[in-house]
Length: 377
Image 1: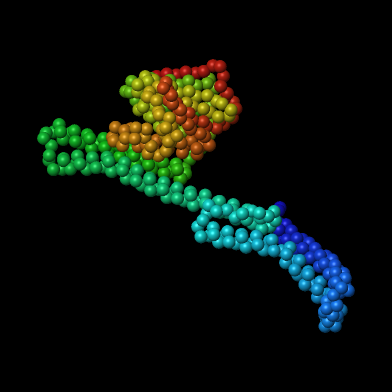
Image 2: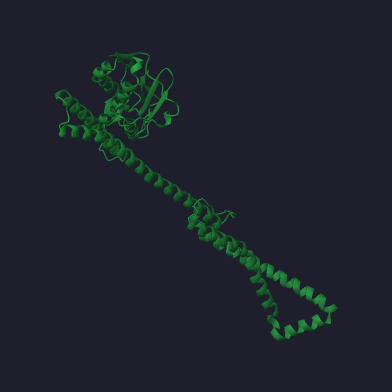
């Protein structure tokens, strides 16, 4: 590896500089002697100075001159690296002061250049970690704010109506029952919100144990559609499953997968009442089981589509009792699907709204054929 040869490369470069400095000092010494001899013939004063130096240092005059030249050449050859090392040190000090957007200049293809690149990479990773930490803190803050708001709204109503009952401010038993019913409905909504929040936290941080086994996704969807027959009828909708004749075997926690499609069906029933029906399409594509939950209700604005799977996000931006669920259902569905190595996406146009779930198939034995099995309710 390149990093293992750093000491070797630096040693070889230093030896090369020493050898080059020695050669240059010898050549320069010889040239200086030749120039001094020629000048000494023309300038007697220079000849006397040369003789004086020779008398003073003797035979070591040329050696001393060569050593001085050698040190000068070696210093000049190393000066470029010294300056670059100074620039790198200043850059690191500047970054250490909190300027994480600054990059150490990479000007040399040697060990110092590699060091500058590694420092830039380290700073980049540190910047990502800091951004993720800030995002996590912001996420926690938003979570607390949203939870506080959503818990306070039904809780305030419950306390209010129970307070009226406690103070005997009901005109008759009918009004008393009405207050009790409202408090009960608010309590159920509060219970749904708390359960969804608890489930989302478990899915988000993968603290919920999974019971992994192999099951037929087509059969699971058929059973789920039967269970939702009454809610569909109450909403004035019909449901139909369009699936291949073969099986769609997948491996995972069937209870959690059921939770995904329960959330999608509940969402389709709530927002697709005007469409008259809900369709479930199941197929196999390139080693994946693909399920689409389609409703024919009002179109979801394109500006809202990228945020549908964000927690507490609602298309209508309302937070009242009639605004639908807790705003966590789709976020929970996304977490479950991703835990199973799949993907979930939404699409909407003026004619239909579709939520597509892709999950890895267990094998290639269940490929979509020309025959399809349809069940409807």
